[in-house]
Image 1 (cartoon, helix red, strand yellow):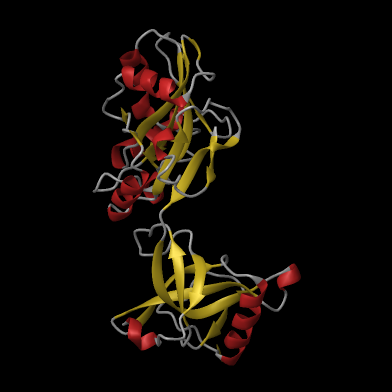
Image 2: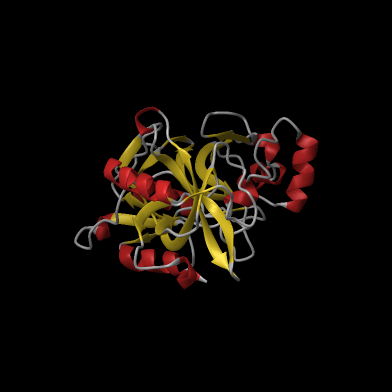
Length: 309
C-alpha cells in the first residue's frame, strides 16, 4: 500500500488520523512463515534477503506464528535519522552475499516496522488502528529491527517536531483505513518537510521537445568563503512563463567558463555569470552538501550573490 502526497489533515479532523515519521530507505515486505526462515522482498517483489544478513535472526526472534509485515529498511546516521545516501551502499547486493556481509559490518541496516498484513491469517481488512495494535503487541525490538511509535492527532505539533529534528516528513494514516496492497491510497498521506535555500545560478541545461531553447534545468551553487560550490541541478518547479523569463536572463548572463569551484559532471551544460539568485525548496542534503530533491521556488532579484557569502 502506497501513500499519496498531500497536506496535513486539518485540526478539525486530525483525531481521525495517526502520524508516523516518514523514513528515507528501502520499502520491504517481510515474510515469516513460522518455520525459522525469513524472506525479504523489495517493493518490486525482488528477493533481497541476502542483501541484509543482519535481518536473518528475526526469524528465530519472532517465533512460530506465520506473519507478513510491512516496513522500511534504513541506514541510520549519527543522530539516529534515516540516511538514504548511506543505505545506497547496501542496496543491490542480494547477488553477492559475501560482499553484503562485509558491508553489514561497515554500514549496518535497520528494519523499521509500521504495519502487519498477515498474522496467522490475513488482516488487511482490519482498520489501521487494529492492525497497529496487533503490530505493537508483537513487541518487535531487536538489534537490527524496531517498531517506531505513532501518535493519534496532534499533527501540527508532530510536523514541527519532525521539521526541527531535520527529518524528511510525516505519514498520516486514517485510523479506519484498510490495507490495500498495490494501491496508492488517499487514506495514507505523505507530508514532506521542505527546506529553503538561496542559491546562485551558474549554468543551465537546455530542455528537449516542447522545452527546446528553454532551460530544462539550472545548475546552482552556494557561496562559501567567496567561492561558488556546486549544490545541484534544479529541473522542476517552473511553469512555462517562468522558463521563458529565465531563458532571457540566462542568455544575457552567458559566459564561456564554469563559475563553480569544480566543474559539475553534467552533459551539455552551458555556463552563465554567477549573478542570478534564486530560492529553491529541498528535502535534505547529501553528506557532501548537495541538495536532495530540489525544486525551483522563485527568483530573488532583491538579493545579490555577494549577499549570500
